[in-house]
Structure formats: C-alpha cells, structure tokens
Image (tube, rainbow, N blue to C red):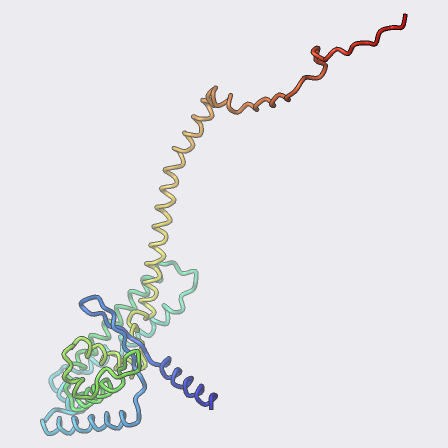
Amino acid sequence: MADATEDVKDAVQDILDSRREFTLETPDNEILHFYIASPSGEDIRKADWQYSKVYNQAIVDEFLTQAQMLDLLREKGIVSDEYTDKLETVRINLGAELFRLENLMEEATPEEREVSALETARLRDELFQLNQRVNGPMANTCENLAEDARTDFLTSRIIQKKDNSKVWDDFNAYRNEDNTAMSIKCRFEVMLWMQGLESDFLENTPEQSTLRKIAQDRLEEAVAEQVKSAEAEEAPAKEVEEKEVEELGLPEESKAEEKPKPKPKRKGRPKGSKNKPKVSKPPKDE
C-alpha cells in the first residue's frame, strides 16, 4: 500500500515538474509565476466545439474564408507573382545566411561573425514584414477567428498557479478578466507552447546569440584594458617611490633599532671575583 501511494506521489510530481513556467512583471515590480499544464480530453473536446461554433457564426456573419481572402488579395494586387517571388527569394537568402552563420569556422573574426549575424537579422525582419502583408488580412478570416476562440478556451483551462490550481474557474471568468495584460500574456504563452516554441525564442535565434556573445566579449576586453591601463599608471609611481627609499637609505634611528640587543648579564658573582671569602689557615704546631 505504501509503495502504491509513493508511486502516485511520484506521478503527480512528474506532472507538476513537466509544467511549463513563465512569469509576468506587474507595474508594482511584482513577479507573478504561471504554469502551462497539459489539457485533459474534455478540455480538447470543448476547445474544438468552440472552434466549430465560432467558425459557423463567422460564415453566417459573412466573414471570408482563407481561400476567399487570398483570392481577394490577388484581385487587389496585394499578393502577386512579384510578391511571391520576392517572398521565396528572401526565404532562400535567410536559410543560406543562417547556414553560413552557424557554420563559420572558429578562425572567423568577430567582425565577420557580426556582419553575418546582422545580415541574418535583417533578412528575418524583411521576411516578417512580407508575411505581415498577408497575415494581417488573414487574421479576420473564418478559420483564424475560430482558431483564436479555441486558443482562448484552452488558455482558460490549462493556465495554473504554483499550487496546481487553475487561474480561472471557467471560460467566462477568463473572458471577463480585468487584468488584460495578464490574460494577453497567458494567451501568448499558450500560442507559443502549441507551436513548440520557447518563451524567449526570439532572443535565442542564432543571430541574436552571436551578437550577444560578441557584445559580451567586447565588454570583457574593455574592462581588461582599463585594468591594464590603471596598473600601468600605478607602476611608474611605485618604482620611483622604491628608488627614492633605496637611495636615501634608512634613518640612523632605524638602523640602531635594527642592531641586535646585547645579551643580558648573568646575575650573581662573576667568575674569578676578588671578593671571594678568605679562608683562614690552621695555626702551625710549635
């Protein structure tokens, strides 16, 4: 029985340890800790139901589907063959630059690494801007509205506190949350979790990691140079001081103090003293 209880505790602990943690800093500089737990089967079924309900309602409200929106963007000239070619070119260039950055030899100079990292960052930003030309309108399609509803429902169900309790009691509590910053942060973290991305994925791209490493190395070199410069300025003054002391020598008082002290005199009568007591001789016999 005891072994079974321990197994249950271990299983629960494994679930708690597997939760994904993220934090939110409040305006009062308080750090709030939240956790993403795996959804239950019921959570997934209800999330899918939210998707279907919102999708059908969007159709009734005459929102466009993704296919219809894409046709409209082509008709308006927002998406064209030129746009598609440019998008593909930027993707290929970004992939090539990433490969080059990740495979630079150790002999490459920091300047070469920095140039490659900056070019990678530029291409990534250009690709993002090109995608936004389509992603913006696509956000208002039936599919995207329904997917947002599914994400909202899952967020209300799988966000937990440290003690494993849910942040929101139900979906309505999540939708009526007064702390907008908290609900948006939680939803964003759930979106990243669903896509298999870490919270800090933008900070840990190859180009950002390279630029951060270069900046750290330069900072350490600057600090070392300052220390070396300060030591170089102190060295001449120390040498002059030691030379002056050597030339002047020690004061007489100091020298006298350095002489060994005479041994203390032994107490008592010295050997061979004239003050020895006289011993009278016995008288001679007449």
